[in-house]
Length: 114
Length: 117
Image (cartoon, rainbow over all chains, first blue to last red; front, side, top):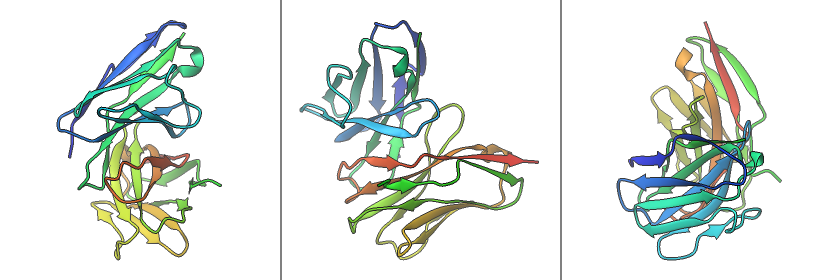
């Protein structure tokens, strides 16, 4: 299994500002995933973060809005830039291991933009 | 077309009874994995059970079992002996391709389960 620490757990932010969410894993992983869950909705993948390369973004998500860093094999950040109320969501990071079928999730960051 | 379909937005079950949450999927990849997650109001995603497309037997984990019907492309979750703490949102998800290959999970819309006394 894996222990994934995600910070902050929740935040209330002013529109137009940016928030950086951190995801720390207790062991090395190749792939880290960032998901968004809008209120009352399912999870949608924002991007896949590989160490040492640019993140791969899903359709509808762009780097300028959701820049991602992956400086090493245990850590990643997601920034939500120039926030608007529509960005109010739960953001979750997820990892998987080559020899393991399970996808592990962080505790999530509950973001409210006012 | 939806890759994962959960047709039950909400379900009620009496405590100690069993409940089945439905999930159907759509993929042309012969290798895939099916997951069920529980999401309480706190927002965390709790892994419950996994079924691989090549697994011959239905997966079981304690009170959770997965009724895997490959020909029908269904992967229903069965919770036996429901407890009040089972009240939560439940998501079915699929990963296409090999495990550990860095493939994303695609989630269904979820089923809100309420366990009553």
